[in-house]
Picture 1: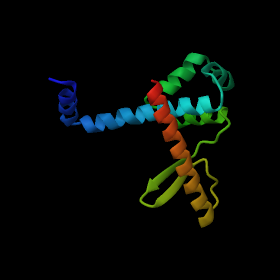
Picture 2: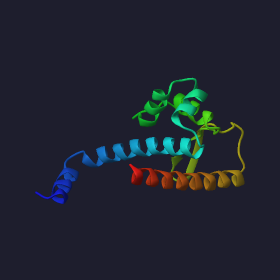
Picture 3: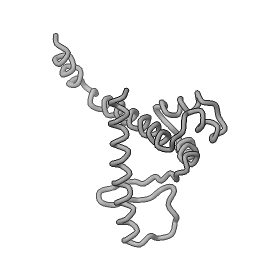
Picture 4: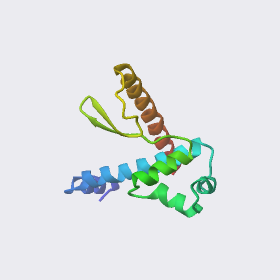
Length: 134
């Protein structure tokens, strides 16, 4: 059996698509966190100092399958950023974390969507670059 045939057989098995999606999501988070740190020009050791932890803890965060919002927020804050969590439901974006509770104007919402798309594109580019070098 060729590698291609084996791959096709594995991907056709029940639950395979869901598991592949989970793995891709894990890799996206790991590569995204690593890319953010590298874009900030920091080593894991330097970021660890900012977080008040040891370097292996930063490595563990960057490899973690599940990262809590608290840990993610501390990580992003240490890089000089601000974590935002937004639920996307159809065409609506519902901010949950990191956005002031005051009502935002439609223009601000449009700008936010543009910034999110731009940030998503930048992160996707970093993820692709990280995958190529892995």
